[in-house]
Length: 119
Image (cartoon, rainbow, N blue to C red):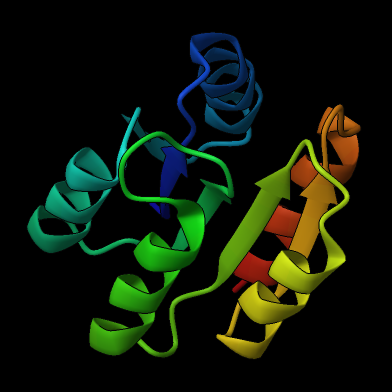
């Protein structure tokens, strides 16, 4: 089974993504901050990460950098409520494969994850 890490400081977003992606057959891990996210990444072999840009403490860009240092091939999708194109571009330059602007279409996110992880 494929493992997904969902990183967002908003519980509602985590729960929504968790519910939809579990129905697709993924094992999901939920993290509210960068420390939790990196701990899960170390403990479990993740197949994909959904990562919010704006997280208190360690922001999404910093988490992305650390994930890509250790797991350069790991697919990471960024999520942002802000149209900050410079930050989005930085994330893409660092290796994020796509970004979703909140509020996103949950089915679009699901389909992108499925397309990325299909065997």
